[in-house]
Image (cartoon, rainbow over all chains, first blue to last red; front, side, top):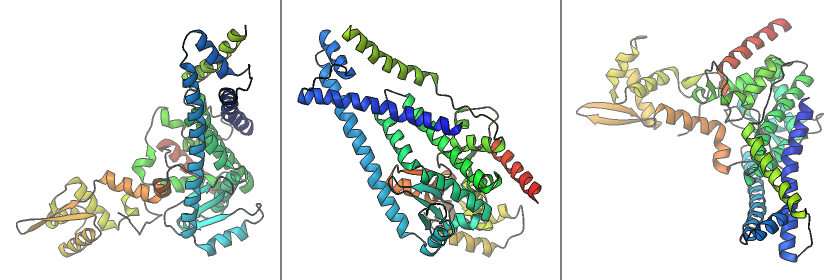
Length: 286
Length: 138
């Protein structure tokens, strides 16, 4: 069920921007090289606005196309460069002996790359767009027992195998660059939560129980400064659907179906934008 | 300010300070500008403590740039350099946001997202459940 949800969210979060990009590309080709593309929604939008006398709409649409392409390219390039710089910094803080030890112990998991940083604070994440690697800290390894360590490694290996940093980055960049389709923002957030749940599931399946990953998660929560980590709550509120709360709920009751509903206004606005383009299309060719 | 001696097994302020240091910081955050004698009096509500010990620890906190010392006549008054919130926020950043602070948004999937807020009730239930799992497996 979670795998199907994950695929659906990725298809929506990636498919809609891909469709918009294709439309924008065709429109840009029409404006620059005069390509004949009568089924382009932006072209039809431009055509319809021109009929109404809004001639400047063509410039506005072209500006939107250029801004979207340049912005997306820039954001992706920026995250790629910064991620590489962060990996270089992590390498400079690496305790190579422990990294190699982990690499040898977990070689059977398709030889994942580890960077164990020499830091007392607990750290566990997967980083990298093209060649992701798992980053753990010496503080975390000291804190965890053998079962918890295995659970954390299986959790991170799931992210690594499925290239989650790349996928979540793409969805997040698209959602930033297309704010007029607000459903993308929620898709991106929910996709991230579901990837965490699937990574937890990987750890549970491989360790044979939920105790390891649950206990490791609990230690990580406890290790963070308290005023920023926890809140007392009697009722459901906006933060109750943050990744960690959804994951704890799942660990407490694996049969429970955690609903991750999209806000109605986001669906409404997104549907309106897409519907509006469709109406323009039908009206223009009619 | 960087705290080098982070204790993963401890909770709250005790992660960053020794037990007496934590109590002194707590007192001074509640009453900034206290003298050594006033801090000692506050500490003695729990347990007897020597004046010289309090003075040594407070001057060590000045050396660590956690306290600022000013003079009022012949009495030294001590003020925390940062508020409790500023201090904890800095340490929180120091511990888990260092990379994001330096590099911005990265292509990364955290085991525990730094922006997540955990529900205290759920944590409590998870703790109970883990105890039960461990008991069952014994």
